[in-house]
Amino acid sequence: MKKENVDVLVIGAGPSGSVTAAYLNKHGINVKVVEKTKFPRFQIGESLIPRCMDNFKEAGLLECLMQQGYQKKKGARFIKNNVHGNFDFSKKHGDGWDWTWQVPRAHFDKTLIDEVIRQGVSVNFETEVTKVVFNGSNSVTTVRQANGTEQEIYAKFIIDSSGFGRVIARQLGLEAPPKIAKHGSIFTHVKDIRRPQGNEGTRITFEIIETNVWFWYIPFSDGTTSIGFVGPMQWIHQFKGNHTEVLQQMMKTSPYYNTQFEDLPYLFEPHKVENISKNVTKIYGDGFVLTGNSAEFLDPVFSSGVSFATESGLLAAKLVIKQLHNEEVDWQSDFVDYMKEGVHVFATYVKEWYTGNLQKIMLHDKPNKVFKEQICAVLAGYVWDKTNPFVRKHKHIIRNVAKMIEMEENMLK
Image 1 (cartoon, rainbow, N blue to C red):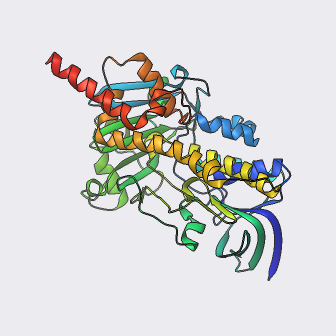
Image 2 (tube, one colour):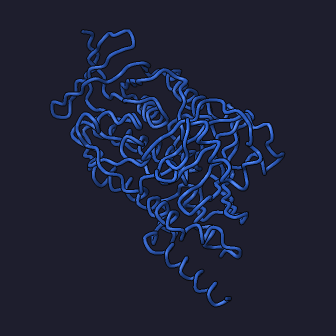
Image 3 (cartoon, rainbow, N blue to C red):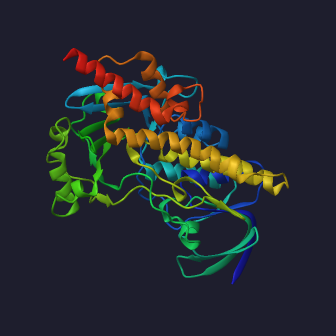
């Protein structure tokens, strides 16, 4: 069996793996990436948030993305009963990027990993991890290629960026119940031939069907659009038939978008994902760390997936470099505690979205300008900025502001 020695093995070639590998390579680390699938491959998570732009830039991957002509995302719109809540990233609390992209992930992910390869990183596609054995911090990973050939990769450290493949989590039995309610999703792409002109047709929109159910509209620059629903499994299961028939029935529940997509063929049979939230018991150990969706995934409502994936991938790469240089690394405080700060902020926003409290604030007809700017900064992904009260006091502030709105409404009545 062929053997190979590397400093760091990265499992997974998505955005987290690409950022991780690019940063390590840039700093002289011998890194190898193995990826189970062949790119391009379909992937959900097509709406980015501005924070991830910082990560792509630091990893040396922003320039290749700038050349692709992806649809710019300058904010987000939320609709319920024809009431609109518009959030403009240029009008947010604090510094940071005020735009990002809406991207077809198959093209986007391939653009990233192609650039990583161009920069000199060894990447093996159609290569599945079948076994991982740790000897202290050193590891031996057995992989199987598409032709059946097996190989052993010896590494000083493994960074698991395998996303929902969750390779190390499955190997070591680290799966845990999700922290967020069990929701599912069904989605596809369409050729958006009735797309409105101008800003109306190009901005990402989340339409609230019920407090716990929402529809996404994510238009791409090539004229196609991603559409999908997220809701409790019991809501999804009320619709009968194949996936196409189910999504067609769901579209009739959308007052705002049903006409635009009525009778349009879907570009592929809709994908259905049950219980989309994920969690693990721990995200690091002797010789490994989990990044991105390999560690935890909350809910797609605020598009945080790629941002957390790249944030954790970049931070993991920095800490691994320190460790390989025999510098002391406290993975709990430097990695786990830092990442969980951001995750906990977003988790609060997801939970309060589904209680209806956050929806009440975001759709208020006379929003408080400062509150809106501070919430907008969270939606942009700047969830570690302690100067923002909606970050610092996230556990209570949303409920308190929603309560104020209720009291105000009751007084007017």
